[in-house]
Amino acid sequence: MSILDRFSLLNRTALVTGGGSGIGQALALALADAGADVAIADINSAGAAATCAQIENLGRQTLAIAADVTAKDQVENMVHTVLAAWGGLDIGVNSAGIALRGPIEDISEADWDRVLDLDLKAVFLCCQAEGRAMLQRGSGSIINVVSISSHIVNRPQQHGHYNAAKAGAYQLTRACAAEWAVRGVRVNSISPGHTLTPMTAHADDETRNAWLTNTPMGRLGVPADYQGAVVFLASDAAAYATGHDLVVDGGYTLW
Ligand SMILES: NC(=O)c1ccc[n+]([C@@H]2O[C@H](COP(=O)([O-])OP(=O)(O)OC[C@H]3O[C@@H](n4cnc5c(N)ncnc54)[C@H](O)[C@@H]3O)[C@@H](O)[C@H]2O)c1
Image (cartoon, rainbow, N blue to C red; front, side, top):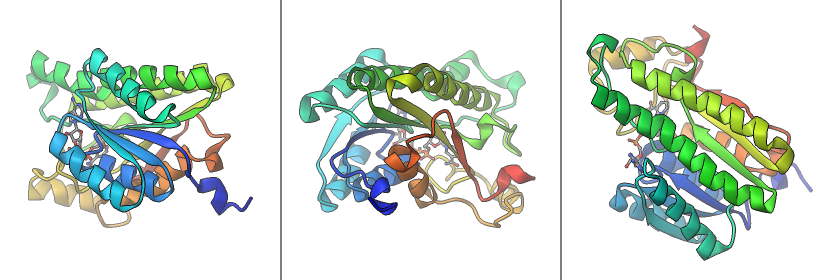
């Protein structure tokens, strides 16, 4: 088997949360391009349908699943839908997320709950439901999209709730990896740097310029920058990698 064969995802099934937009969409298309059938779960049904149409164009099977991943019953139904259609789940990518802003002294309890519900609790619910399905078969790869904000206090924007949630998701990834390693399920994460997606579209010029000047490569990320990372972590090429966080940030966390 050649090294490139070990990156192939032919005959694998995948599920991508938040696959209707931005980074999740790019990750889903990469998995399909590498050979996988890919289900898209998103609260935005139109976005999910648009990604599914692109997956079909790549010649792969797909499913659009309407799900709010902060709700346990909807997460369980999401995984059940994939199992019912395809008989098993090989790859779970958890990318759904939000970023709210605000100095810590002004963050409302409602905003704290909203960010923690989606950026941390939902990652737990998805890992649990995906992990249970994978543990039954003794194989699988889960990839959580966390952030450089898992590791650093980002600037100039202030978002203590986002930093806390992403750091939690990073450590949850490691806990899942440690518990499930001997049972055939790998769990890793990707930490993107500042990336041009709808999530960052509202950033003002001052913020965007600060990100740019603090990125050694001198450019912001685009969703395609994470496609190689997800195919690697999903595939047999990463068979001995678990609990790893793959930082892909143009060098931002070097300075
Ligand atoms: N854009 C960046 O600079 C950046 C940097 C680091 C990490 N990230 C992380 O990458 C991930 C994707 O972000 P993005 O920039 O592509 O954002 P995005 O807004 O383009 O995509 C987020 C997707 O999540 C979906 N979603 C939101 N709430 C949901 C819910 N309750 N249930 C199901 N789906 C829901 C949205 O509909 C959307 O399709 C997030 O976890 C984000 O924190 C983004």
